[in-house]
Amino acid sequence: MTPRQYVGLRISNDAEAVPTLSDIDEGDLAINLASERIYMRFGEQIRDITDRYTRAEMDQLLEGKADATHGHTWTEISGKPATATRWPAFSEVTDKPASYPPTAHGHGWNEIDSKPSTATRWPAFSEVTDKPASYPPTAHGHGWNEIDSKPSTATRWPAFSEVTDKPATYPPDSHAHTLSQITDAGTAAGADVADFDPAGTAASEAYAVRRYVDSRPDPLLMHFL
Image 1 (cartoon, rainbow, N blue to C red):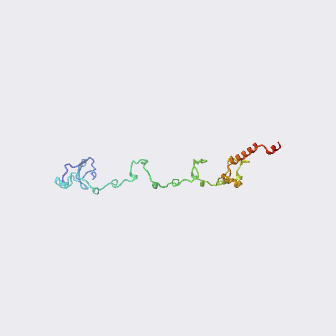
Image 2: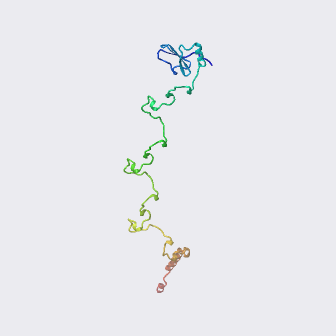
Image 3: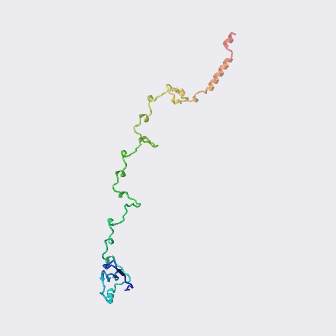
């Protein structure tokens, strides 16, 4: 064991003063000059050693006590104050601020108690305030199946009697008809053109005969001449 070279010393001028365990460490001295008393700490006891011990007796009592450095575990410390064995109650804390601005933080939805009904559902139309008097629709379209109460004029062609502003007569536009569209054409109209003498041939022969006859004198007139 390495002995300490110096012993702690406390001095008081108060005749009534007696050192406590918190005033001196083990092996230290406390001298009261007013009452002329000397005190020493032995373990957990403070003893008045004035005129009681010889030098040899004091050395014997201090043997093994004067370590150079030492410490104590928490369980070795007696007389611990309450403030050293627990956190203080809120009411015991002094100089508390009047308010406690929260630091930046967030809360999950499940951490919020007493949520208002307006936060857990969409509002009913009657609960919405400041509604406009009318709602001009934005540009959009509808499928035919989405339209209700379609009028009859939108689901069929109109009858002829339902058409208004009809003209009194209907002049036909320039057009043509195929033979199949003519109901009274007859069988000749349906024959192939190759079945007939070309119009030019018959007409030319008839014209030639007529000119020849016209160019000859009338035999009846010649008889009377």
